[in-house]
Length: 126
Image (cartoon, rainbow, N blue to C red; front, side, top):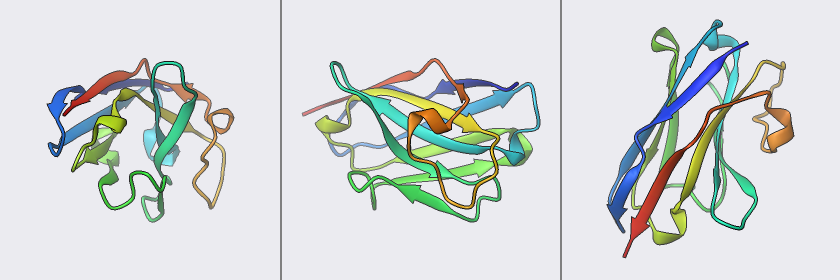
């Protein structure tokens, strides 16, 4: 079992940056694949970015490619999502999720992750 806590959300203007953090506790985090998802009001929870346990492979949704960067610090049991050039359409609740299933590809669907945080709100205004 692993517990996830997101932080770093807030209200920013278009073009600004934010860095989200996902802190894990409970088990050795370094062997988990971690993903970031987001959910806007009235919409489904969508994949944003993911990173394999080895940190050697990452994957991004097309909508954030080139603007967002996912990284992890296994020594700190933390995964980060650096978000640059934010747009109003990035407004959503952002969730981190973890999977302990072996994989060589970053999972991109919600049912592939077993553990979820409570989410952090990101609001981007014009």
